[in-house]
Length: 120
Image 1 (cartoon, rainbow, N blue to C red):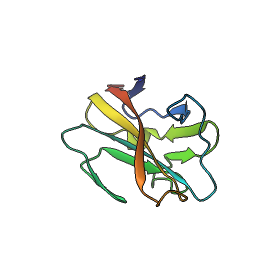
Image 2 (cartoon, helix red, strand yellow; image 1 turned 90 degrees about the horizontal axis):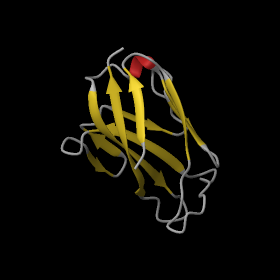
Image 3 (cartoon, helix red, strand yellow; image 1 turned 180 degrees about the vertical axis):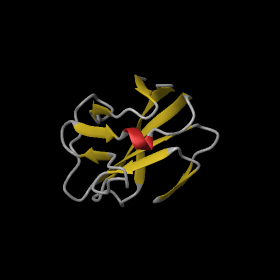
Image 4 (cartoon, rainbow, N blue to C red; image 1 turned 45 degrees about the horizontal axis):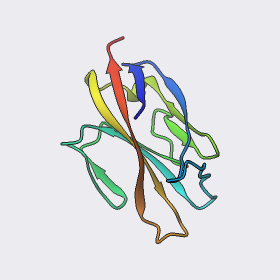
């Protein structure tokens, strides 16, 4: 697990590599999606395309109203806008999920990281 440190109301950019079980890099295809979910384990429920209880959800190809986005590639660039980091400080989980169009188009959890949000 990796620790991602962020501050309330300050933007952050991170590159996220998606790997298979053998450690090889998975590059999402043109029709695949990558989703980042930030929240607490006990509050987040993901059922298909619907995620409830999360503090922030970012899906490739669909930036948030404030501009947070994830750009797919060998390095998936996650950009979180400071305006989207306006929730309570504390420790959260950050899930990296992928929807592989060739594999029944289901969301699969790829990685889980620790997301620490601190006051500005």
